[in-house]
Every structure is written in C-alpha cells, then in structure tokens.
Length: 179
Image 1 (cartoon, one colour):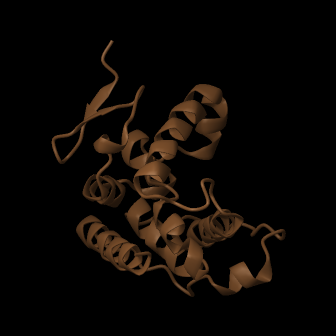
Image 2: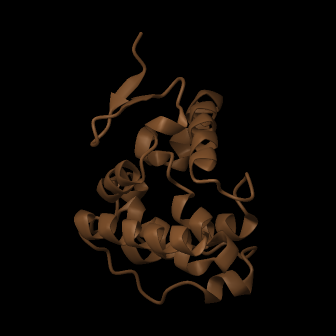
Image 3: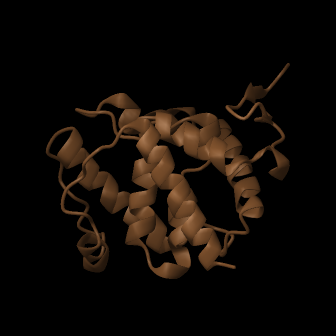
C-alpha cells in the first residue's frame, strides 16, 4: 500500500517512513499557509502558518525557530482538532512524532523536544484565537502571566499567500541568526 503524498514541490512524502530529504521549508510554508486553524470553524480564514509565526514572535530568542516550526508536521498530516486526535489516539500521534523527529533533524532544532515556552505560548495563543475568531472561551488560568503578556492584542488574519511569505521571511531571519 502506498503511504506517500505528493507535495507542492513535486517531492513524494512517505508518511510511513519520512526522511530529511523529503522535508522542504517551502513545502511546509505552502501547506501551513493553506490550512485553516480549528478545522475551518473560524469566522475568517486563519492559517496555521500565521499562527506559527505569531508563536515564534512570542517565545524567547533561543526558541523562536522552534516556535515557527512547532506545527510543521501538520504540513504533511493537516491540522487535526484535538478531540479527533484524542479519539484516534496512538496511531495518529506515532505518525506525527515520526514526522516531527525528521523535522527536528532537518532543521537541527535544539532542544530535541518542544520547549515548554513554545508549548505554553501555543496554548495561550490558542485561547486568544478561540476568543477572537470563534466565540468567547475561558482562558486556562495555569498559563503564566509572562506568556499572557506576550500575546498580541488583536489577531488580523491574512490571506494564505501572505501567511506563507511571512512564514518564509521569519524562517530566513531565524535561520540566519542561528548561523
């Protein structure tokens, strides 16, 4: 059975056996720019690419590239909502972890696991996105104040192409800084 998907670049990506040569930042930016957060249930299109570069802007300098790429596996397996991820469970998580492991290797992300600042910023931004783009929703009181203060005041969703360009712009800046 073929477990490959064809990417924008023409690369065949093997979901069962991903390798670093199958990973391309332009493919990631393209896909994430075209994937809507929250299974498309926002009042306007709001991409995973835009979400990712906002997370990158929120986190401390050593973790900005992690913030940008924290959802990069979704370029290959889409942005599945948390309830469905929980329902499907382990099979989905294993595929996601396998892809993320290759992404970590490709982009030499340090540390080799998602930093807590990225995780907390992602969660805090998720609550802001829910409140501004879907419906009022209580914020998790366990998210530290310093993370909440890093949130943007307002989210202004952009068109997919601009989100892709911003994602690639941030990647270029962050990858140059790490050299």
